[in-house]
Image 1 (cartoon, rainbow, N blue to C red):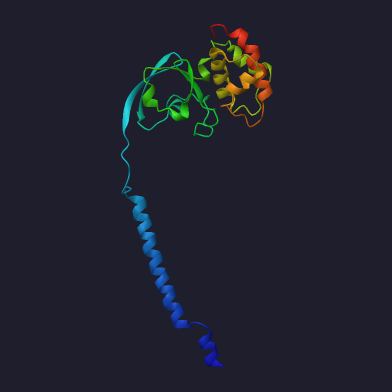
Image 2: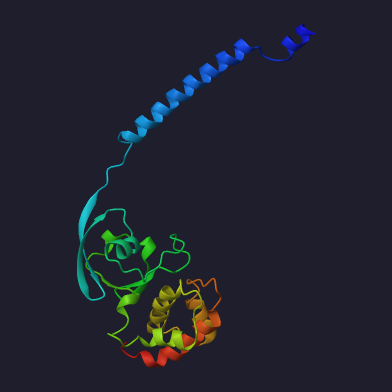
Length: 204
């Protein structure tokens, strides 16, 4: 019977030896982790920064940016213009739409260093003082938003769409607004807002 018990599993001495070995390995790993956390990363990439002068909403803004920084991150973090939203960050949702030299662009796909000297307009630059841009007012009038997260990008695209002359029909408006996604599905109201604002825009 005793022999059967011995054969069924490890004895006390083997268990103690295994525990001691495991404890030693664990301590060694913990020491290595602490050393790695306290020291400099071995393969840390050097961050390259350059001075850039940007014209944003009619004001010249000077900033030192990482050469890899997007215009979106520069607007939000360096200039605190948080109206431009970060949605997918892959150029697929349109939430980050701004105007660059009068054309709508996805700021998440635009490097800040590449637009020096360009005229950049964000959602904050549309209103004139306390007077809302006609497109902003139309979005309010038609409840063309629900959660509101995509609304700045929707408005920036809608303003550009009117200036591009793509308001011939509801279908045309929908086609040229298709790059801006609204998860709340306020699309019919957005079309109505564009149709209201288009004749009111003029030189706005």
